[in-house]
Length: 71
Image 1: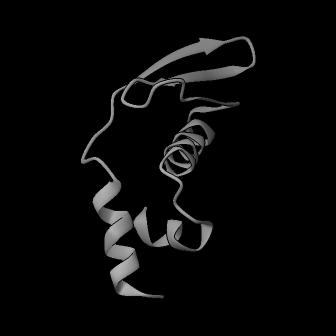
Image 2: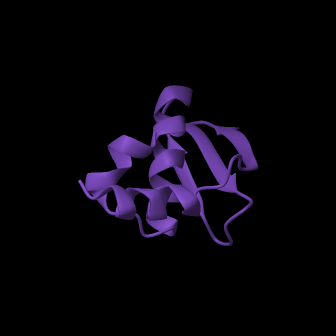
């Protein structure tokens, strides 16, 4: 894995994000406020956290192979 490329993707990630979470009949829905039109959902809270990470990585166009090093 190229460390220069990894540093580039690390620099894209904010230190924190603001997320509005709503409970639904089917689980949870999250609106990631820092990124326009970025939403996700999960059946339980643990899945929701995983899906929020995925949504942020997808929004920032971070390739799959680097995501494990960024979590």
